[in-house]
Image 1 (cartoon, rainbow, N blue to C red):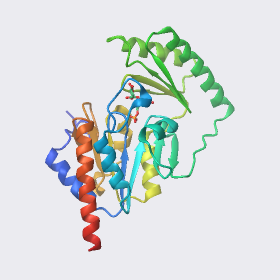
Image 2: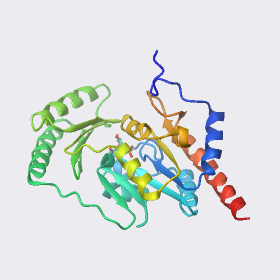
Image 3: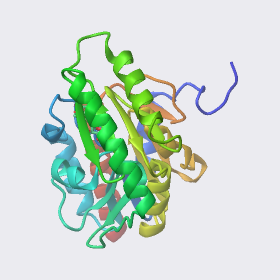
Image 4: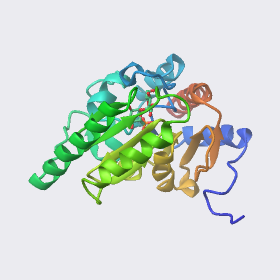
Length: 274
Ligand SMILES: O=P(O)(O)OC[C@H]1O[C@H](O[C@H]2O[C@H](CO)[C@@H](O)[C@H](O)[C@H]2O)[C@H](O)[C@@H](O)[C@@H]1O
């Protein structure tokens, strides 16, 4: 097998603990975190998802420390991300897979042109007709696209939903960005990705090292822009091929790591002011 980043087995737990200790000592630390499947366990009702309390507590500690930023990088629309993260108005949020950005009180304007608005309207109509026709599917409307959810569809019928959604979308436009997620297929009229979001965050915070964690295929764009040789740390949550250096089992493991990182960062900042 070729030793490309995505085929290399992620390093051990001991190596990860040591990388986090090193990360805690960086001058300007950015945590850029995927939400669903990384901080929050999956649930049927999308607006009901919340970060595990242990993760939320660790992130609250971290975001109150000097030279430390916590950002959420998600496929969710910003409005939905604001709700589920319970973020305050200073939060750093990247929504819609990198298309929507809200850094603190600076808003975001998408300025869709007439052609984009038309494509969006026709795409919405086509996918709405589809979910109306397939029981237990649901359409999620996003500022630049739509997600067809099929978590509640009976086992084994997912591929059929995906195939029919692809077909319906293809009839509208052949220029869509298509993302297969966990029990969701998404179509977007704009093509930014989570890597763009992480890069924007890095520029905005002037971070000297970045932690990015994610569970899904779309998070691979985030791992791809990391620089491990400069101290960045990428953590894949769960199974699947990845370019991340490290892997953990689930959201609970992420909560534990965030607690350890908060402790190490607090200790480092305290020792540098003593
Ligand atoms: O980038 P993420 O923060 O991981 O967001 C990815 C998608 O998350 C949401 O859908 C997923 O979570 C739902 C709630 O647990 C679950 O019901 C669904 O099956 C999952 O696909 C969100 O609704 C999507 O917009 C995001 O793209």
